[in-house]
Image (cartoon, rainbow, N blue to C red):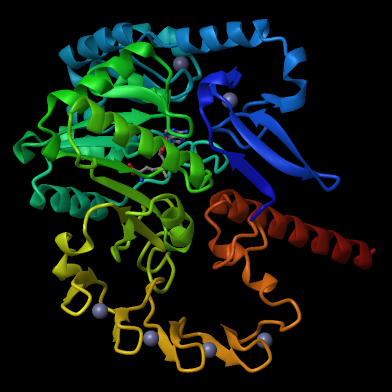
Length: 459
Ligand SMILES: C[S@@+](CC[C@H](N)C(=O)[O-])C[C@H]1O[C@@H](n2cnc3c(N)ncnc32)[C@H](O)[C@@H]1O
Ligand SMILES: [Zn+2]
Ligand SMILES: [Zn+2]
Ligand SMILES: [Zn+2]
Ligand SMILES: [Zn+2]
Ligand SMILES: [Zn+2]
Ligand SMILES: [Zn+2]
């Protein structure tokens, strides 16, 4: 691990930043553990600078932050925005505008307010119901990290939910699923969106969208917490499921804590012993961490495909063996039928659906692939391993062919986040788009540097 621990406890006593109650972290400082409060949602201090050592909390002056919190909440008037939405819906398409610079939906008679701004002119009804398709994604890996599902993936997931007869879908950070369901009345399903991105206020009414932070279960507006509670309650409990795709860079522990809190509330208000079914979408190499926090969860073999993430796609641009992102769920694996037309098949020994390349190993007594390749059994390790690995006599275990025995097992962990099981090039905590941009700039600079050297040598 990264040496930074998050302490899961009652958040109501914690100081707040504009993103709700902070989290308590602890890290080694000169060999001693020291705890501090910091923002639950932003890992980059530039985005939220809140920081206070726990042992200095007495000296903490919270007047200024209280005002910032109020200003932040008041920056959005959802009722007013909903009225504006209805006004915009009532005029012909060519009179509707959306300003990316101001993040507002408007009528084109106020164009002078948006001089030199980045605008979309003429929004169709479809666009009004599917803003995630034209919003420039906020791709800050340390905050929103908005990686959007590909269209076929959204369709497959919604069909899966429909086949299982779920009608009320709580979408936490899954705007594409929300938009697909609420945009198609023939499905006989409805959805409620909870998301950190306040741009959705302009497109969805207070009864279908709540501004929310999953890392501390915080509703920015009290009213949306009330609406969410009644959404949880008023529907027949057995028809409800929650689907979440939180930013991959975020900590697992607070997400797990939030999901447990929502589940407890669901059971309490519906007076049921049955858990709220949950789909939690996350990379396969986080499996052990997730199962650590959620003991009744298991991982499905379905590969979740993204539109705007180079590593989480299938096809030419993506990894050879498909997206590493999977669905973790508290539903029994055997009840989830994966699409046969995408190559998924049923293993009757494991009693679950697995991907095409996942072969049943009679020695391990399971279909062992995790990463999308067919794993091979090693008799010495007594388990299946990645096909690119080899048994190393020195280390007495299977490892990558080019591993260095001295450094093992450290070399196996990611250079960036220090988690085991993947390399930096596959790390979900790296902003790969930013990195490839930087690399390109780097390359250009290098080429320029070479050129100028050459130029100099000519003279
Ligand atoms: C990895 S994207 C998932 C989007 C999803 N794949 C889709 O296509 O619908 C993360 C989503 O969670 C939202 N989000 C980011 N930080 C959040 C937070 N702290 N609490 C709740 N939602 C958050 C983002 O705005 C985004 O919609
Ligand atoms: Zn904050
Ligand atoms: Zn503007
Ligand atoms: Zn099997
Ligand atoms: Zn095996
Ligand atoms: Zn081995
Ligand atoms: Zn070795």
